[in-house]
Each structure stands twice: as structure tokens, then as C-alpha cells.
Image 1 (spheres, helix red, strand yellow):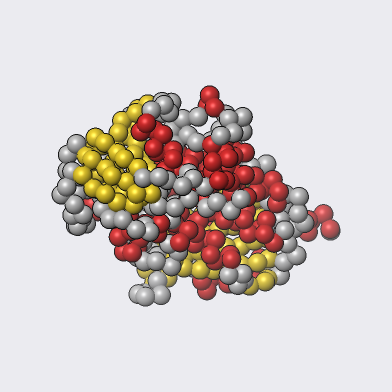
Image 2: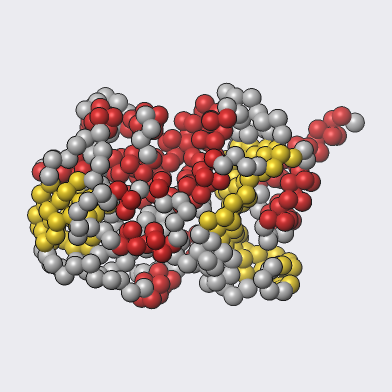
Length: 428
């Protein structure tokens, strides 16, 4: 652990401790791996107990319009709970499950969207794609607009909130007895992929992406086995499908980006959204990428009174071989960065610093990291700088973590500083 002077603009100079992820199980786990050995995450249990869920319905049968939306669980894999998410009302419900349209909304608004949906569940094997129920889910996933459903549950929906760091909040749930669907209209682009049994899943994902299908829709389709070589198709847990699609698209974008010339100058972007501060630096060098996260005291995954938990993961030009230690947000942000570079037809080394403040009161899913960085970059408001010193000067004005702490936790900055010194030495 390292001790440093921490300046809080709202209060006074204090002594704080910086710890890496390896020193703080909660910020590694984020409620998904149960590294503490407990059967349930105590942080999420406490948060869920504090939230009062408004009862949507006490009925065992409802009629409503699915956005469309589907959830595939992961517990018990390869036998998992699968089913549609549907509100107890009809109409255009697209906004209830379309993260691309949520940027700018408050946490309260986003949670209200999600808690309007009731999750129907049925236990099936992931490689069992035969049957009327499975067919309904696949038709739902490739629909181009909301679909009217009639759903009958075995019991009344359980009034419970499910919170995860990697997926959107999930509201009431109930075991399905029967489901009926009214004439879904398939998106022709999705339908083409569905009937191509020789097209690899990764190629299908990128083809749909290039046909302007939203990432969130591709993720749903990926999760219910509507793409890929026929014998390999299966249900994929929602949290896995989210990361897989972000990973596939960003990798393919990066291969294109690697053929471009590098930026001429350093570009720095800055933005804030729902308790997250983003400081993004694009250096005029060959492709590499790093995401650094700093969880402030009394934030969701850092319950410490006086420690800031810091961690990072990175890749150089040859890419990343193992799963990122900081989870799905690594791939979501990488997708946003790769999109920007592809759009401007330039190559760069990307350093992204994310500060998570106490205002980020609950997890709403990795989509918010992807959409925040997408929107910050799309505004194209950046500072063009000449040197690393100018970057550090701007960094001091925008974020709270001391520069020396950032450098000590950044492989990209260490590499950048080392290479600069080596070049200066060679010139001598």
C-alpha cells in the first residue's frame, strides 16, 4: 500500500491510502465471483434490502409488449433459467431495454425502466434449441420492434431486485407456465444471419454491427443462439454474451485501425456521467490500450472509509490473451475507443482513466461505460497537446488521483516514458 496526500475539492486535504485491486476483493469481484467465500454478496444484499420495489402486478397472468428483451442466466450452467422480460402493459416499450438510448438519463430513470419489466423463467439446457418455447425466444430476439406477449406464471412474481455490475438491473421474476406471442416482425438483417448456418458467430456479429444493428440487440441475439455454425449454436448467459460481443467487435475494429497512420498530436477528452469521471488520452503511437479504475471511499465496491481502490488492465499492439482482471467494462470501453479511431481513420495508444464517485449508488451494467465513452468521443471536443507534461498538467485539473499514483499503476505511461528516454539516449 502507498500513502499519499489526497485533495478533495469539497472538503480538505486528508491522508488516504491507495490500494491495488489485489488488496481489495470487493472491487475485483463486484458481486459476481463471491471471492469472500460468502454465499451471497453482502454489499448487494444490503443494497437490495434498502430498495423498495413497487409491486407491478399480483397476477399470475399478464399481457404486455416486450421491448423485445430476453435474459439468460448463468447459475447452474449448462442448465440455466431462460425467458423473456415483459411489462404488464402494451405499447412501444423499446426504451425499457435499449441502453444506446439511455445516455443522459439519471440512475433513478434507468432503474425505473428496468423494474418495469417482469422476468419469466424456464430451466433448459443451453444446447437445447428445439421446441416451441426456444423458438419463441429466438423470434423475439430478432424482432425489429416490440412484441405483444401473453404470459402465464406458475406463481405470482417475486418482488425482488437483481443487481449486477455487468448487466442491467432486473426486477420481479416468476417461473413460466405458458407463453403466447402475437406475430413478431423479424428484422431482415437478423433473419439473414439466422438462416446462414455456415457463418461463424464472430463474423455474424461483425456483419450485423456493420449493418447498423445496435450492440445491445446483437448481444440479445447472440445469447439465444441465432447465429453461428449450426452445430455450435446454443444459449449463452446474458453477462457472457455482453462481453463476447464487445470483445468480438472491438477486436475486428482494432485490426482495421492498425492499418491507419497514427495521430499527429496528443488528444485529451474529458466527461462525466452518473458519478463517473472520464479522462481519455490518445497518444500518437501504434495501437495499445489501458483502462485504469479508481473507486473512491464509500463507493459501491469500495466500502472503506479512507482508501481509494485502484486497478488497471492493458494490452499492447498484439492484443490481450487472457480475460481482463477488471471485468467486462474493459471490453465495453475498448469498443468505444476502437469505434472512434476507426471513424477518424487514425491509430493511437489509448489511456482511459475512470474515477468512480459516491454518486454512483448502484450498478447499472457495463453498457454505461461503453455509452459514456462513446458520447464523450462523439462530441469531438478535445484538447490537442504537444507533450506528456501538458497532459499531466491538464490531468491535475480534472481528476483527483495524484499523477505519481497514476503512473505507478499504468503500464502504458511507464512504457511511454521509457521509450521517450531511450530515444533521447540514442540521439546522444
